[in-house]
Picture 1: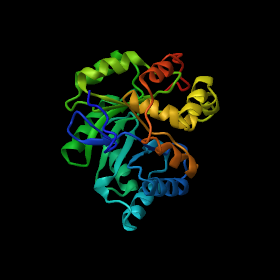
Picture 2: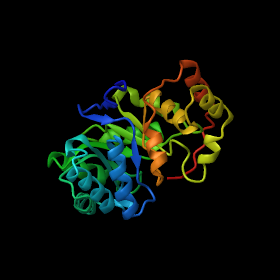
Picture 3: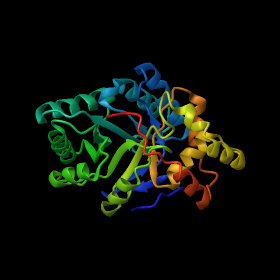
Picture 4: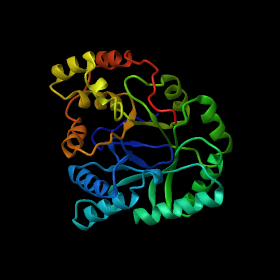
Length: 277
């Protein structure tokens, strides 16, 4: 599996494209919030923006991106945009992909995921493959596929190898078995809810071991967890509507956790997920 480059803050995917290893998620944001969050995230240096058709904030995400480009903060080729499409029939999937591109006001997205397994997920994947051929999507992936059996099913019909799997993944749910399996295909895992997600963040940030490391490294508990995710080879897309937290979340490239501390955090795993999808 390709290693993370902390100088460029990217990882080389199995299709030859580079993907930023730390970004910002937009789940639960309104269009207005998404515009502000995305614009400021890009201003802070973040280059990975994660959204989805289901989030209903693609217009706001696109507006934030466009404004940052107009203001000279970034160029389009500097930004890596991830979208997601829910399972549905092939023709409907094509329509959703086109509408996603329209609402984002982008010529292409850098990564598009099948949002979750379900009736029609194969149709969505084939529709995504078609849009790769049309150069409207650069990279393919899947989200919320948690078992080796699910991955093998996708690989059985995929004409284009998925490059990324995005799953719930945090200190209490690490899914080492899946992570080890996908190494053979050089597929990278992205963590959503890397800090536990809404309703659970406090529990994660107050974990005694994490707090102790926070004091040792002079970093916030969130920064400790996110740095652990990166050093474990997981891209992370923490979501927040708090600009200070977003800025702090990205300020994790000036320190390194020891191998012993990585193993200690690994030992916290409870195999405990918070969501069922």
